Length: 330
Figure 1 (cartoon, rainbow, N blue to C red):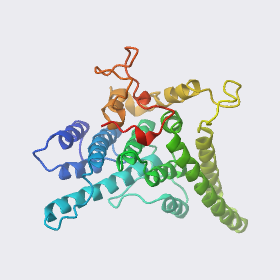
Figure 2: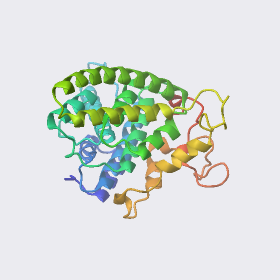
Figure 3: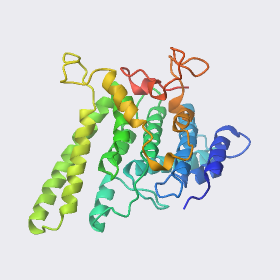
Figure 4: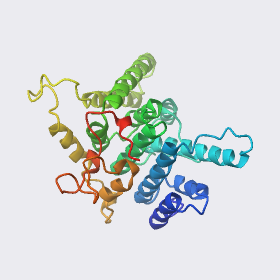
């Protein structure tokens, strides 16, 4: 059950980001409790993700999460240590959202733990289906945090954890794939780390599949494990297929995506409001704009409009041909 309601989550999100007169730690803890896929109102989870993404990304950029080395500043070191633990909890819960995994107070495990639990339980039927919009917000939060820890450098370990959670989870949605391919994979650094991560995962799953195949020869009832392996293989292929080539020799011939056209189709696909829990008046585009990753880029005017005078598309805030880590909005 949700610890707080939608309005209270929105109020808390504003308070932890703007009220300097209070210690935000307690408010952050309450928001962290809302970042889960099994709440009654998915909008509460999304609201919490938006508030926490801005809270942590701005403090990461300022270096506030670095523990003080001054022995005389014990109180400051303790506060930053608690903030660091909250940040770790936030990233774990974001990965759980991407994997469509229900978390307990101890948070979520990694991809190997998730596969082990699924195999032990026999099925993942007890895991509810997360809203694709919630997954898109979780991905945007992860990517903003990954480039904010050390501005100018991408935290590829955090990115790989999130990618693993998505492809090994039970809800790798077209909307999530569209957000990944439309906004992040065109960036050189993200694409480089994607190739490396997919290569490592493919090797791991190949070895795991070989062991499972030997086991299935002795036990013909493990059809669920085979289906999960096939799903993971398809997800990895979809991610690789979404990586645009670095050359344009075959542009427009049908052999490779056409720059700008197919990317826009993926973006539009990612932004289609086709999940049922968003028919209550929630403005998802406005929610995207509230995130730090939605801050306008060079083509946005002071009034938030694009260079053509139209509304700025939050998916177009970055240079699609540059590096994701070089575009931190400050």
